[in-house]
Amino acid sequence: MAAASGLATSLAGAAVDLFVCRSTPWGCTPSSSYAVPSPDAFPRRGIRISQLHTQLAVRGRRGVKVGRLFPRCEAAADQGSETGLAVAAADAVASDRSSSLSALEQLKVSAGDRYTKERSSVAVIGLSVHTAPVEMREKLAVPEAQWPRAIAELSELNHIEEAAVLSTCNRMEIYVVALSWHRGIREVIGWMSKTSGIPVSELQQHLFMLRDSDATRHLFEVSAGLDSLVLGEGQILAQVKQVVRTGQVSGGLGKTIDRLFKDAITAGKRVRSETNISSGAVSVSSAAVELALMKLPKSHALSARMLLIGAGKMGKLVIKHLAAKGCKKVVVVNRSEEKVAAIRKELKDIEIVYKSLSEMLSCAAEADVIFTSAASETPLFMKEDVETLPPVNEAVGGSRLFIDIAVPRNVGSCVSDVKNVQVYNVDDLKEVVEANKEDRLRKAMEAQSIITEELKRFEAWRDSLETVPTIKKLRSYADRIRISELEKCLQKIGDDVLTKKVRKAVDDLSTGIVNKLLHGPLQHLRCDGSDNRNLDETLENMHALNRMFSLDTEKAILEQRIKAKVDKAQR
Image (tube, helix red, strand yellow):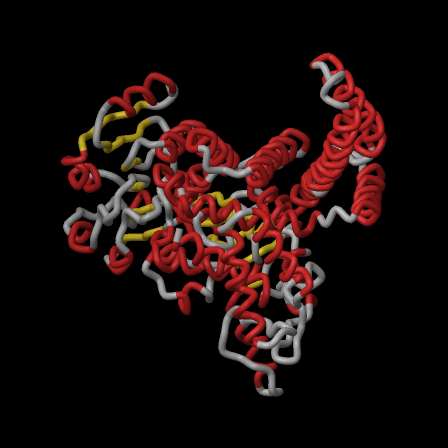
């Protein structure tokens, strides 16, 4: 209970000093002590934290306070009022409902009422191949088996309601529904720093953050392959699907995040089926094969000796694309032969030779091109290992190629210092992507219209949820009146004539009257979000009913959100 009270105090404190306004990119209302960068200062693609520091440093020379990544907004109430209000709200959540309402009423009339009007923000915080080197991405990578644990830890943060983790070789992104925008972001970054061991000061140079519609659009573009190194690559869509499957098994995904990822899957499928985006290289593995063939002399590209380390999903795709390009033989080193045998059974057009992990170096000595995609926490090839390998034939270029598509990397960075050895990792696949840049841009433009359609559908669905508290409060209000008047009526009838049949008849009469009276208003509050015109009208009806019956749904929503976090802490 003490932990729950502390959590409630934190949330109540957030209600006092939090400042959020959806009209600014940082969700901040400028105060006399803090100036928010103009929306034009940052591109739609996201806000880099390092850019914020630059903005603040410039403004700091003009007398604006600088020094905190996420500064607090000074509430209108004095410090004593703030402290008392925070304690009151904390006690309220820990005690009964009536005292909770009393504390929340104080909160409503204070400067903290901005918090009660804040809508939870959908946000993404992360880094990708576009913003961070592979050395940093591999430290932050979360294995698929640990996604449920990561989701649980993130959801337990004070200002995070829902969370999901999308961790691949090219990106590590955390999607959240934040009870408080700037406090939630700060907590997530702290979690990332703690789990990876990377200081926040170093992380902030590579992180990007997007909010609400920008965060939604980003995930839809990721699912469609528009943010990948290889345009339209299908592997990322499968990984987005896996986030949903993992969430369904563990029960970790909340309502909003679950719908967000499912709509992202729909967007990804539509983009691939309605555009030509999947033509050419469509995965990291296919790009790796294209890069290898690009570096080899054309006359000997298909006759080069190919070696693959690791027969997982990525390795299987490498073999598949080698076969598609006309390669006739590949040696595969793997811990066990079962996976290799299954691949051999499926792919008939290429000879697949299995070798055990103990034979890796001897196989490397006989290979011209070595693809690595093994799941290993430490590098498989170091400088001293590669220096002992014999030189390759001049006919295939005289250099041994290491193409490392694993994260963490299988080939140590020191290997690139060895003479007649070329090392490439996932970052180097950009060379393959640039080869078809013009076509990529054209296809991406075609896909954007589909992304926009799906984005509008998701936002309309989310907007439609705003009417749910009003529906509940209106029915509760009507039921309270019905029960009160029913009791008065039954007292007037008297016990001498009040049989069970009469009581039931009167009760049914009152219930029927209330239901018929509410039918019209409630029908005008229900909307699936598919029609924007109907949605706008529904939201107008909601605001009108809130005013007419003084439903105060904002206070109810805040109470519900705080209670949910406290209940989770108690469990």
